Length: 157
Image (tube, rainbow, N blue to C red; front, side, top):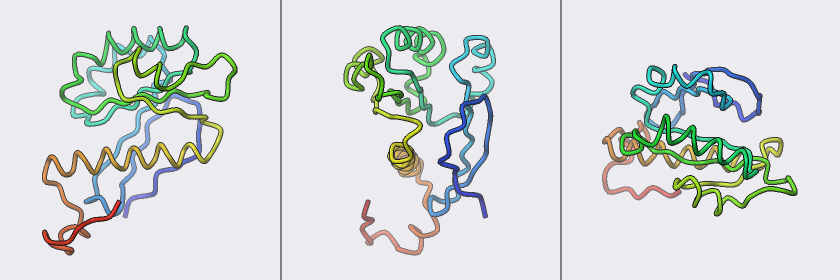
């Protein structure tokens, strides 16, 4: 059995592999690049086969502008091959931009977050789960639970 995805926020550059139980044992590899430009030359290799990208930005205008440049340089050309969402972090700051405004700047679905608030982490976890469900559905990749339920059983979300 795979381990549960840790909802604890750890601000570092890292990789972790986890399995989602109940989602067909889909393997999930989480790469945290911490937004550092010096690692973008590795992205071509690391993003091969990637189905979901979560682009986290601090919600200040300056940071979103840097994130937009990074997105345009490394992800925009791949957008048709993967799901890309934005996370507008630090929504507790006075000088924050709204997730809706950031979504317009980046042109990707964007959700607000305060990483140090565990309630937001649960929301992001649910967004990730829905994206995995969407990809599983598109690829015909069913969980054991779905196979046992049969085609006539309606799933509740």
